[in-house]
Length: 287
Image (cartoon, rainbow, N blue to C red):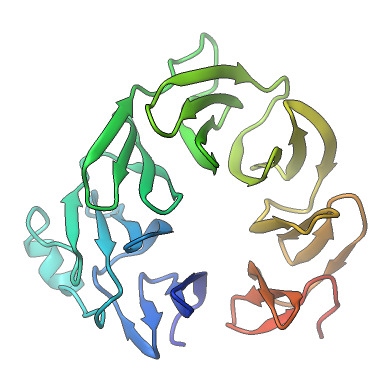
């Protein structure tokens, strides 16, 4: 692999690897369908839905790659500079020019939920039909800048939970878009990511604090060495990878040599993919 891995997905039994430069590798074929990094991605029933962002050129795209055929390379970065308003993501079933920063994206299969800065929260199906849309969170008095920005979207069965950096959240019916509950965490935080398992949520703040939230109550609070890169609940505890560190939320931690990228269940154990593209067991020291 020429670039460090960013995320691995599985689609119809095949590994799909996204790297930090926006390259996508599947079936031993690497292609860059759009010449900038992928900021958000999720697997839906038709393939990979993702957003591409170039901060220098101040542009973004959102597209669905069906993965049924070979992914092709898109325009070069040089050509993109000449066609910022017309170049689209190669091999896509549908593609949109996005006129606002994508903040979060998730899919449960047939529905895709995403949020755009200063625009709203949207639900579409994988054929690109809009199902519903909602306004963003209102700015709270005396709140830090952009604390009401959406930072994560969780999908639990027929419920969507949208989280802001400042700890506000909104529960929404996946089917209708009706807001069924709104609340705010009673903690000071700058949330970066939220992981979920059934009724359990693991919240990661940019200052290294992590909280477990169960049925609306904080059950564990722990300060880590860095923000959480990835986390999974293994029916006993949260397995976490942080800054050069493997952690059990209620247990010990061990350091690792390389930067961890993602937790993957492989060969009947939880393995860590690092930024060198190598796998090693979670919670085992590496030399």
